[in-house]
Image (cartoon, rainbow, N blue to C red):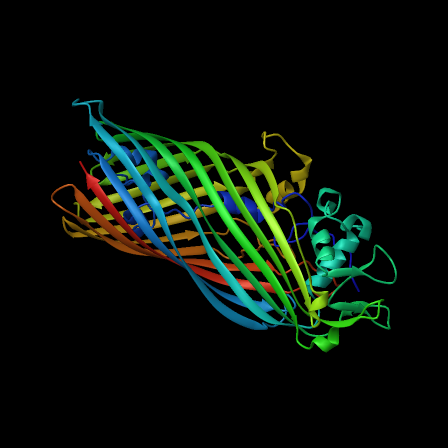
Length: 534
């Protein structure tokens, strides 16, 4: 029996003409898995107390004043993302099938310049630096594809249940202008594409094309289906930093970043359903026509761009030779976000005469998201210029995120997701460790490790993407520095992205959860920095 749907559609869907912002969106916009230069990546980005590298400026703006020279760097990167996906036809049941996918992407996680100016003073401010650096703070690269059999629920049935629960009627779902009325866009799309229709001679009771009303009066699917779920995601977050640093007596280094955050994200989702035996899905029309359901496809494409400004202040102190302490704090960022989305659906039958399709207009929505503050501290020890050890700790309170309208004011539309942030987000703690060994002055070997807990609590029976475990990152690299101005660094980093749970569509039958996708992901980054000192 179809049950009342009390939650909003999962992030897969849109239930109305506005974007359906959710907790996962907030994380996508504000999450950091720092990139930068090959040296900083190889050392696990444990650079808060080290400085001297343009990748370190993201962690601590005082780092630009540590080295008494100007420098330029450019860093190309190849990211390889892999996912092993498991299909559960009923969430919580035994796995139905598995599939592995991978994608490759070229990025430029660092490019920048800093100029160092020696004051000539023997005491006080000995030098200061100015620079502009672009460092990547987050890279999204994901592809999920899996398929399996399901004889319990269907996407078309879920669409029909939501449409009926929303109180829609055929009159408001019909016509080219329906999308500019009061009905939800997926309700209109499902009806106009032939995925849903009315029954029992009513205009407000809906069933999916894969369903029928049986003799016991219940509506359910007619036979087993083959279902496929696909999801591709790519995007990045970059900080454009206008940096100022100051060297005081070679003991204290101060710095400030005026930062501009630039984000982009594209996400495409599709769901296919195929009748294993089309004759199970026979449809008899009032005009005497007969056909059988064969397959359907739903596709949803979403993209966003975001920008905002922030300030970051930092310091590095060297109380004794070889020992350094560093600390930095970053203000929240008011991100201005623009979303665009479009959905498409088609329904195909054994008799192509009855095939149907529909597409929504392109939707747009603008709003703001206040990102959380960040604070980090670090310690580093340099043993005679041969071994460098470093450790960082960073905290980011995701509980402080808030959605607002495009002018930054409270809007009741966001009450639900802001309540979700308060209830389910939490502070993320990040520990970073790095080591650098120089067997000879011109050559360095490096390694790093990062551990970070998930920024959200475990959310049982919650209809957003659910990340239940922490992330771990392992990195290594090497570097060469010539007697002249040229230097180059290499790094390889493996990131365990943990598990993500994607609801395929909304639950709509009592005691029968809809399909769930479990995705276990990793990312491998190959990074090369080319630099010049002068």
